[in-house]
Image (cartoon, rainbow, N blue to C red; front, side):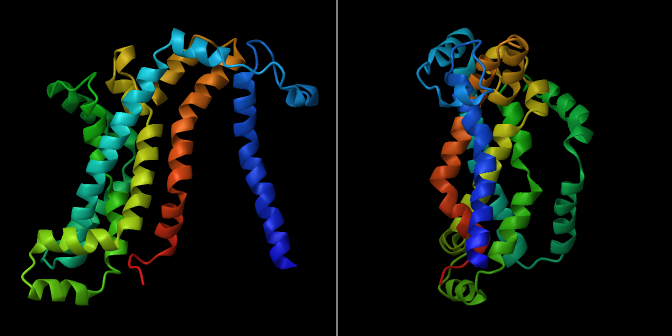
Length: 270
């Protein structure tokens, strides 16, 4: 009986989360000016079309913004995972005298809000001539303490016997990281990678400040520009929002199994 009740609660919560997405999609497919507020509007699908999508794509740089977001998200994710996993390996498996101090310094970075470093970050990017360049967004996003923290916890679960056996065979530190720690923490790295990608995708404040030309904007920074020019059209606003949400939904659907494994596993299979 308790299991049935829990399943019903889970179904209700799932419907509550899906409802806004379905409403957004439905409004985006309705003709411009047609609202979806009554039950009749919900069940009437005869007027659905993709005219709003055509108009948004034609009258804005949304495809360019989406491409910029994908490129920046992928580069940030891949490079961040490599850097975070190397640092996590060092803190987890390499004994050195100042390990605790450096680890504390890195983790303390979680306490610093992004807003507190915007001015020095902008000054640095300006002197390096990175303003209005995608590397102005990518480089600051490569040092994320949460990735090091999470991956270290998983690498702590890698048995010492594996490391010692590889060291006896003559493997050096880079080989230990590449051949042992990376394969055994693959699910954790995918989970952290998804987190990095979504974080990069939703990043707004710094990209909005560092990118000055409209064609170089990412989706999260370009959407407010589009929405401000179409405040009277709910259909176009929902269409742009749907386009922005589609890539992250696809990523989550394709990789949700790895997210569950990353949460449930200790970092080592078997």
